[in-house]
Image 1 (cartoon, rainbow, N blue to C red):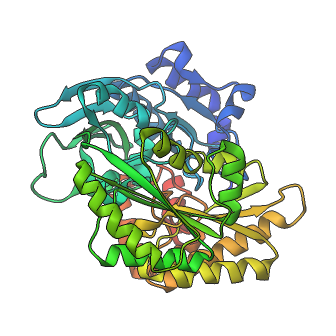
Image 2 (tube, rainbow, N blue to C red; image 1 turned 180 degrees about the horizontal axis):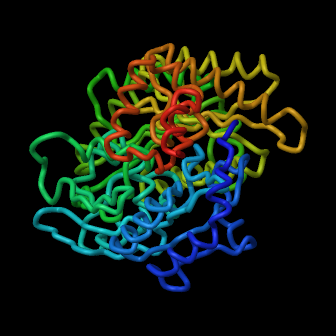
Length: 480
């Protein structure tokens, strides 16, 4: 994975850049000592690391604007950072950039239960948004697996989803408004506490833009009343393809579960050993959750289990209590930590049409065998957002590169069957050089023209999303 060479002119002016940033920030909000910068040298894509020029940790929209104005005047690239949980290298710095972290911006600014909205600073973690309203019977729907740590800023940047996105949608479906600071320090307000805004959908444009267009400092989010009840069932199969067929069959009958999660044998064993969830030892397992009144839940689970039994499942386990429900979800919620005990891994997130699940799962197994690696699958099966985990040994020469090549083949397969490169992790640097597999030259040019409008100097996260050779001319002009 290639990154641009750092600009020596910026490196030579570090002292001046730091001095100007110190003028607009408190002492504890600016980090520039080499030993302290190492904490920000990578995000959750830990295979690549580079300490930045400096790190700023503002506490308000006004401080963010002041920092960006300084960097704009000094022509210094800025990499926005939420909690650093990006799996695609979205917050990977370069040696000549300033990391702008929003982790200190955690306030709840407004709660309106009548209009069902909450306005927060975007450094607030995903799970703590629900924590702020659950005592009053509400919740925030998007629930990425990293929800305990990931920030709303990063959720907006990558349009994150989660296990319950099948029914409630991903971040863009739950984001009503945003305060965005542009690279020159201009503050703009998009959307608000209402269903939709007139004119161009700039809010939809910003959501999922991976820090290319501006820094989102405040967000107005949709909150929902807690459902009357919810209950999962666990279904085990002796083949991944059969589990994929079950997902397709459930969707076809028109039932909309709140979640359909998939795990295959390597993941089932690892998560069960890690959590003691009591999962069956089978080739593949689905967790299907529905919600509503007791009668509605019973009816939906009855149809789902009937569909599953036609496919000769190894086990069907319907939860009968809150304790059983928690145990069914226990291993799935700890899947990524559990897999880390087995080996190093790369976590992908290509998205495919649900009907292609059986074919894609079979092909992934064949590809993995061809590369001599193991792939564990755990993903949001209801909307086809796959998360293949490619296991490898980082201490063995060449294994990382082999794992990356397998990952590229899997993502190309997702595009070939009518899907896309990413569902919620973003492009970052991980999929940057694969963009041409999904988009042709005019498509990429149109996307870069949008960035030209918001960030004409190409100073915001400039080495991400677009292949370096495609964006080279624009970045070169910006550096002059």
